[in-house]
Length: 228
Image 1 (cartoon, rainbow, N blue to C red):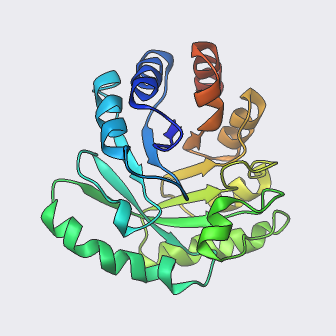
Image 2 (spheres, rainbow, N blue to C red; image 1 turned 180 degrees about the horizontal axis):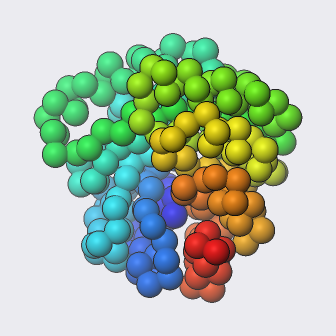
């Protein structure tokens, strides 16, 4: 479950976390690609109250968003793009924070942006083009290169608000190129999309907007689809 701290009030975040605990969600992610970060600490605390036993990971857009109070940080390198800011510069800027907070686990993550049928916030902010949705061989090569560099996780993302989710063939290409944990998100709007991603090899299917708008039934049905 991905929670956007700009779009989710602390009270709503706590309720979402309670649903997550009871309905089969594996991990809570906190983050966004663009937006206000002012109430992020309050939202993180609310998620902790609602789901004290679920891992809470931060999905940061940059070093300025890093915060204490999470279990781990997905240390994202946007390997699908060629903008040095998101390949290494934000990571260098993060070092002082990480040195002050050795208790937070850092998960080096190959972040691969996939064309989801529209221009998303992450594409606009990062000033990078996504990989084509019909080129699994390109996805495979980027993921394999990231593994050879030494990254420890992979995140395929069509972006928030994507018209279509990451296709099964691309998920399968990433899975075949890596034994690392594989996150897949963006444009996931229902049970069928969750099931397809899982069957193709995703370890974690990331859903955000749908959970924010839906109720416990949405959480339960999607979690059951992921476990099927």
